[in-house]
Length: 203
Image 1 (spheres, rainbow, N blue to C red):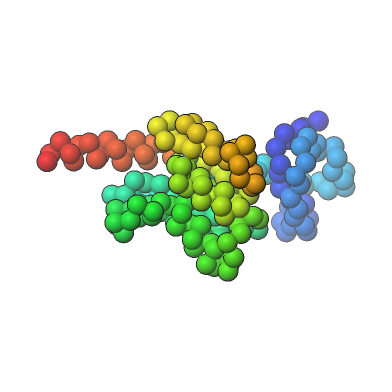
Image 2 (image 1 turned 120 degrees about the vertical axis):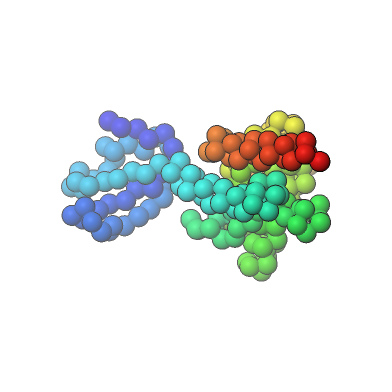
């Protein structure tokens, strides 16, 4: 009996073509044996596939930053299983220290929603958020943060600090998961800083 240890989407197909229904389960330890035996075509797509999908969208934003010679960090905020807003670093472009991808995305989401509370939304960002962005995430009530690469020098989620920890005095707990497409996210950052060092040598 196959056990899926992560939340998953379950799709039931008729004649292998059209989905009859789709639901998300938030339980752990779902087994194929729990499903109705008359459904001959049952496909279980692990939530990791969804995470990769949204992180790829964040990586596309990071690539936009890279092409502008900005630190290549991209971010998307997801609502109801769909990308709600997208953003990437614009600190150099806007000459504004606040223009981190996460802060821009939160600002866009609040304006689009018409509310500062984003408590039913999740964030996907290519690099572990810094102290400023982690604070903004707490203040905006983001439900969960998925990040790609860990930031050992300034990551404020778990590497250098733990801003999401409610013991610091705030009353909103942000869940987080790191290492989503970590290799791909790290590779873009490493390439950016390698090129930056090479440009600096030519000066």
